[in-house]
Length: 335
Ligand code: TRP
Image (cartoon, rainbow, N blue to C red; front, top):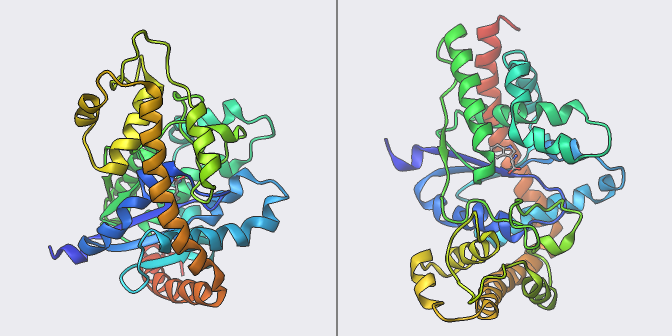
């Protein structure tokens, strides 16, 4: 098959600001992916409603525009790829409902992300959180996606999507393409700085855990300096995610950003201290982030330009979505 014909779908939630974890696991690959694939990049604003705080609504438009400007700053090109906001293509919600009716309660209740969320969330659990993976399935299946690009934490959701699609096809004929998982292993799950057994998350209440892409250099330095390592004597800079999760996380960040293998870095850091490691991590993070920020602020100033990109993206995405939803409706005997 012509490589360009291979469709890749990816999305990020616009809740809060994006992090170095989003960048390393997903965003940094998008620029190159556009050369190889027909890419569809979505801003998953409907997903962001699952963690609804009233005050977020005032910030939502801003977060969406910030996210688009970050996509562009990371090299996403609207001439090559489709970029759009999920809520502006209504077919996502329609297909979501249909897929809900083909997904089992037992499947959703097994989702690790849901189980973790309900364990940590203190407020009431909304059913959007429960149905979150079927909305993801709708996002993906609506475009007859060949490959879904995600971080490692989303792997289970993609497996579920494949199961739902296979089930649907076995009932009604070949309606959906069964999407494959696309994960770039190195850096596909960046952990919290102070609690490296937990994923770095933009919604973390402890901001010391997270490096934001729009954060200033001084703040980043402070956070990296404070990050948890271990008390091995003598200090040992080697990768071992069970016994040395903090050091392993820093090595993984550095490896992804400088393009050297973990093994090379371990050799390089023999007899060096944890603060040497942190210094190099800081420099590489700062270099990437300042490059992104420079471009970000230029794009972010031009709201009309950003809105035009959305409009074009919505038009292109809608065309594909409408056609595929029609096929689904027909298979179900809907008008
Ligand atoms: N849930 C994904 C995340 O938090 C974002 C997302 C929404 C997504 N819909 C998607 C990713 C569809 C891939 C495909 O990272």
